[in-house]
Length: 474
Image (tube, rainbow, N blue to C red):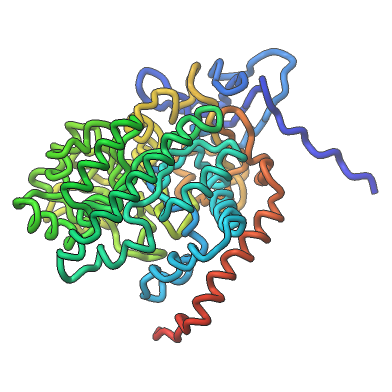
């Protein structure tokens, strides 16, 4: 039997033709029916309704929605698969992510590659990445450079092996005794930023990534802000992620909220992405965030499947720049967009009689994951399909079984609420198709899968040896 030749992956100069195309015009997204886009190497040269003429290679997806590449506003890439399915048992995932540090560099790269493949295959072309250690940040850069991904990586400070003693302290003396070690981590992460700034043809731009406000002192925060100013890419932080954080900052620093304390020390002078914000002060903090254009990274799966909701509808109502992000356990960005809207609507209905809320929509979620995040990074060449922008895009099947009705639907963004990452079929960064027809092109997908499985099994073997797995009640 003669097999049909495999399709050739377009590259260089080519045309993308979709059933729908989410174009950017006059400051906003607009859907174009039967839209076409001309790619010239790393940028978009033309966007229009109808066919672009010429004898050019074509990516023709008449039942797909062509989207800007999603910007993932908060993630810990290497920690997804080691914790998935474990956090739901009600246990802390601290020990699994500590054991990741026992992997060799090669094993760590295998784990990073598996998780980055999942993120890429769900349509994310830019990652605001808080690696849980500097080793993990180096691993992220090695894989991202090879695959042509766009990232803003940094090692979490304090890193995972120092974090818990400081974060879950019972005495603030522990925090002040940690200053020397934290200052050393800041200097090491600054060196990492200098080393890798603009690596991968400019796609890698490291950020400073303090864990949170309650794991810093005035001395370490001052050093972090100075380092962020030198790098020029800003700060990525867990901000007011729980009530104990806000209480600790108020206790230590004159009654200020975390956002007020960060502002006092100049942390908002550049880009700032703050994740979770479960315990922000709604009387004072929204004005600070809006004033500085800081972005709230809403992570609907942060607590694992079925975890607690976050203040997404409240942030939208307050006018805080808000994006959607993966965090740790789920690497499926489309699924997280859906969870943001569905979970946000449920939260809005429950909270409506207590606080101002705005009902989330899929349009708002997509705008947050593209235009809002791009503005927060200071990038007017990302998050949009328009001439001159970077050729970062994905195509999503909104017509197939479970996603659609057999052809391009009349309101395709709504179909994203029925999709997940499996509906994403093509993904490109700087015009390079890293996913083509649902499969990786930047690496052997079966090899990435097998090696990533071996790495995570080594982590689980360590947990088994420690008798970490115990029966849980139903």
